[in-house]
Length: 168
Image 1 (tube, one colour):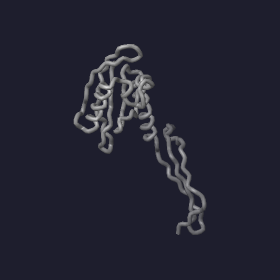
Image 2: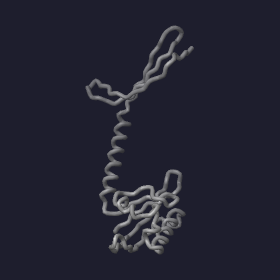
Image 3: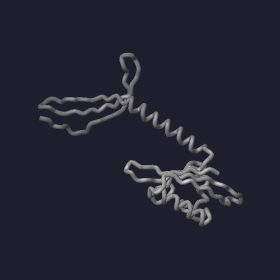
């Protein structure tokens, strides 16, 4: 009969040394119980070095991606299904202070704002898989010409959000 002693199991991460003297990361799970009148202790040790390696590679990959996106000379953004901005690279963040309430209205002229929003809707509803737009704006007293490319990003649940790149 298993009678659990008061207390809880413990788990922790540490490093173990192999016979060849190399080190591996492990996670240790330990607990105890009473069987009849005898106190028994047990532990399980799991090699987590592959999990740690994968996590470190993912972190390095994300760092490379964000470094690239933030030094790239283009505007990159992601919009959700409500047309709200959910990701901006640094170039776009620098521009964001000029955007009102995370949308195109108020920053672009009415015609350009409507054109951009219609393109967003076409991406979301699936009628288009890519929309290329060219437009010009007056921004901070200078004339700028943009090429904007919008495309769907399909999420795990099958829904679409909008990815976009704009080049000045």
